[in-house]
Amino acid sequence: MSAVRKGLAALAVLVMFFCVGCFRLGSGSPSGTSNPGDIPTGDFTVRALPVYRLVSSPVMVDAPSRLLVVSLRLEGTGDASYAYTASDLHIVLPDGSRARVFDHPRALELLRRAIISEADMSYLLRPGHQPGGISDFTRSAVAEMVAGNLLDAGAFASGRPLQGYVVIDTGVALMSIEGASFEVVARRLGDDAPARYAYQLQPATIVETQ
Image (cartoon, rainbow, N blue to C red; front, side, top):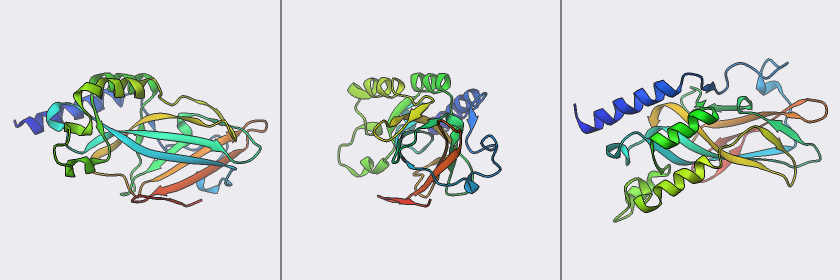
C-alpha cells in the first residue's frame, strides 16, 4: 500500500472513530419549526471562513482533506440578543450533501491527533512553501490556539459577538467548499422566537442569500 493510501486509510479510521456522537448539521429541525427556510430573517449576521485543514499523516499534509476548521462569527445588528448552540448551524455543501460538526471533546481530540494545515491551498503556488502552509516551528502553537478558541454555545448581540472555531467533516476530501451555503437559526432571548441568517460562500467574496 502506498504512503498516500495509508494516509487516506488512517484518516478514514480517525473520522469513523470520532463520528460516533458527532452532531449532524442540518439534521432535524429547530424546536417548533418544520423548515429553517420558513423562519424569518433575524437582525444578526454570520460570517464563516474555512481557515485550516486537519490531516492524518505527513504524507497528506499538502492534499485536500475532509476535515476542516472553520472560523465562525455571529453578531447582532439590532436591539435583540440571541442564543446559539451547535445544532443551530446548517451547512449544505456544493454537491447538496450536508457537513457534520464535531462536538467540543472530539474536536479537541482531533486537533491533538491530526496535523493542522492551511485550508487555502494556494500556498502550493508559492516557491519554497512550507509543507501544509505552516512551519513546523509554529504548527503546535496554531493547533493550541484553535483548541483554546473552539466555539461553544452562548449568546450574542450587537457589539457583543460570539466567535470561535468549529471542526467539520465534509464527507469527502475537497479542494475548496466555495459554493457551500451556511445558515444559522438562533433563538431570540426573551421570547425564544427563532430567526435565521444565511449566505453562500463564493470565490473571494461572500454573497448573502437571506
